[in-house]
Image 1 (spheres, rainbow, N blue to C red):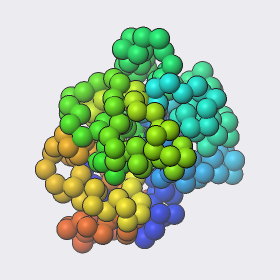
Image 2 (spheres, rainbow, N blue to C red):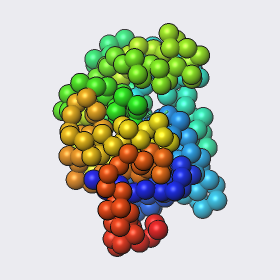
Image 3 (cartoon, helix red, strand yellow):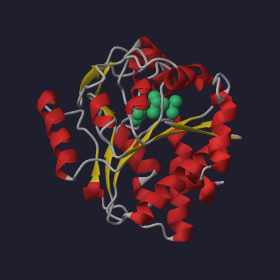
Image 4 (cartoon, helix red, strand yellow):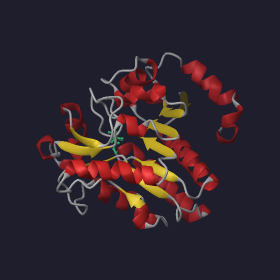
Length: 261
Ligand code: F6R
């Protein structure tokens, strides 16, 4: 795992978008794993800008989102399909047929989860998975006690997550209690993982995920097992990390990061 600390949320999101852009230029057929949430909005804004101003080309790439609420129509403003269309898909030249999210309205949810896993496999697996982190330490909707080898399945949301997402729904009682999410096992099979966290509300959970023990109580900690995972944080989200100076040295000195400094 590598940790990159950026001065603020703007710079952290910008770096995340630049890494995605570079991977996409290197492989136009990239299979890109995507996340939703407030943190990602800035990243999508930047990718859209790169598409408009620098002709960043999404026409051949395929996308798989991490999760979707159970029971929401794609047209529902709170569905993740709607989020993706509004913040990203309709502003770039990705082929809508190449964008995938779990179907939270499927009659047989278990079958839908198997279908989603099969689709990821059919496209050769995810090349680059972009992730946020919830206050409950989740990646996707892998809430505490999610098996670290779990696959795509239906998951009940914890009170912490219901509270985190309540403002978007106008109240905790309006947040769907269940979602389909890629499993921790599915996520860590991606070739490369990129986790972005910004703001002081993420400081504690980032320290647990990065420097704490690997535990299903903080599913993001499973990323410590991943051979190529980069965690990008702003100063606020980095506040509780113990080895900040070491992480800064690596970013400033290792040749891999030369083009990003
Ligand atoms: C959503 C997802 C979640 C979010 C996380 C952070 O697709 O995967 O894990 O990334 O809950 O959400 P924000 O950015 O709203 O704090």
